[in-house]
Structure formats: C-alpha cells, structure tokens
Image (tube, rainbow, N blue to C red; front, side, top):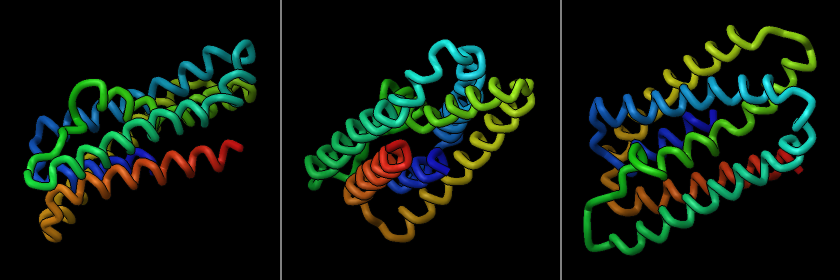
Amino acid sequence: MDAFAVAVASGVALQTVTARQTFRLSWHFGLFQSLMPVLGWAGGFAVRDYFLRLGHWIAFALLLYIGVRTIREGFSHEDEDTCQDPTQGTRLIMLSVATSIDALAVGFSLAMLSVSIWLPSAVIGLVALVFTALGLHLGRLLGCATRMGHRAEILGGMVLLAIGGKILWQGL
C-alpha cells in the first residue's frame, strides 16, 4: 500500500504518464518489494535485531528527505508547470528502498518460520508491480482532473512525509 500511495502521488505530480515511466516505477517497486524479503530471509538471525530496530528509521529518513525535497521543488516551480520525474535517477532508487524496507521484516519472519521465501517473494513483487502501475495512472487521472500543476508536487511531498511518519509510528 505504501508503493501504491507513492505511485498515486507520483502520477498526480507528473500528470502525463508514459508507458516508459509506468514500466520504470512499477518494475523498480516490484523488484525491490520482491528482493527485500529475500534479503531479510537470507540475513536470518544474524542481523535481525539491527534491521528490526532501525528499518523504520531508515525508511522514515529516506521518505523525509524525498518529501521535503519534493515540497521545496514544488514551491520553487510556482511559475512553471514542470515537475521532477520520480521515475528516474536516485529519487527512483530511494523511493524503491523506502517503500520496501518493511518487506525486509517479512523475510526475517519467514526465516524464523522456516518457510520457503521464493513464492511469497514473487507474489509480493507482482502485487507491488501491479498496484504501482494502477496507482500511477490513478494519480495521473486525479492530477488531470484537478489541474493542480506545481501544487501536485507539494501534495506528493506531503504524502511522502505522511507515509514516512506512519512507518516511523508503526516501528516505535
């Protein structure tokens, strides 16, 4: 659901979403959502306590950084209609990590239960991929319907901050 919410915010900010952008965001979110449980499962008990204690802080810090940066860019683009593309560069990687860090704990849990990770990981990745694509296009429709322009970037940054706060709250 975090990936879906970020995808909606990205779609609102972009307003025009290409097939390439849909593929990039969906692929990365699906890939990271799929790989994080595998990493958590492989890490098992050795680093379990470290990630369970700090995972929510890492996700919060990444989303805080991206959210504040997005809001700042939204205010600096008040005269323009262009928005930063969240489906490119380091922003894409940071969003992918931030929205999938909680899947690391899923991998740890499955390792403790001695459950195979491969099918759950594939299902998690596929669901994230589909919901990201749907969210991106839903956000595009909302952005076009409301004609928010640069304000969409500000709203998207606020959504990222809210998701980061939710992750931190749940982790404390």
